[in-house]
Image (cartoon, rainbow, N blue to C red; front, side, top):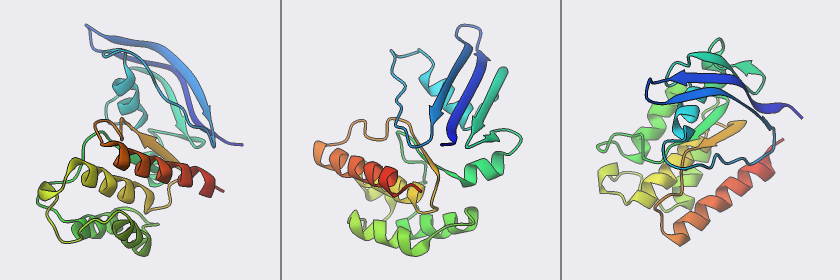
Length: 180
């Protein structure tokens, strides 16, 4: 099976903090969590994986492609859920779908609508009016609706009530079992 993530000698130096030659491999079809105390470098590693911040050294390969040289193709194949909603509060779920349909070549509008219904998300309410759990459900719907091959989560269930958390974990499990 293809390696989902290969990180070799990742380095990022902030002066007061340094990721120092971090290396690990995540086989396809795996669930892996980064665990550590605050300030250990989990978020920095995550941001480097997504090429949100430049790394000072090392290499990152996602699904067999260099994350910098093939950034657009790599991002087409990954779904990302951050610990906070990344969408503006004045947008509505239907707006999010329209915007993302222009971003992803494989955007599946019927699948997105399926998730909106499944998660009981009101399609025309402003996001600023939605609960944290509803916003996270929207982020999951958005992350899954372009048929990603890799799903990256940054504390996607943190601070959610147990019912919503279990519902989202079921979706993550379904993503794994639907994988080709």
